[in-house]
Image 1: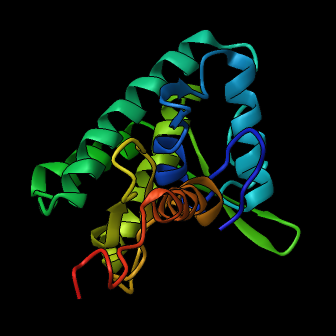
Image 2 (image 1 turned 180 degrees about the vertical axis):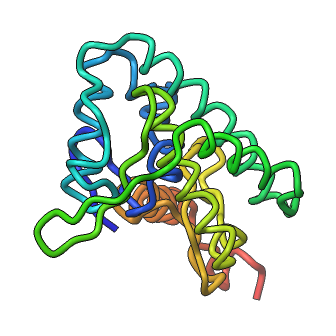
Length: 200
């Protein structure tokens, strides 16, 4: 899992990385996709992480409509993904929803270099939704979607995959270290009870 200054939790899965463009810093919730420029940076980050092939998605740099639709898509994803972390299994309607979004921008294929690239055919908004939906359906097909977990920090909204069932934090850098520091401070401030204090 990669991290960047702008988008600190990159999973390599387009749908989860979209959900994780909302996070909490110092107790305040932040949206990392506020402007078209933010969306363009996110798409570039997805290209660099390998979640998107540069040729798979149209230019989104001049389209406020795409930004608005991506934010709506993220809201739907977050609702369903959080439900999954709480033990709610994806329904047939859930599957059909993402299949329907792909139908709005079905895929063609291009051979680019030595890679066979899936390219959605449709408007920029539909193309983004189609690529995200394909990722959701792949995760559903492999069962990985059911390993979604929410960070153990109650103030954190980041999600992650955990096939082992042992992971607690979105990342050690973001929340794990904070928890360690908090435990250390608690131990430092808590007086040690000696034998004399206990009347022994």
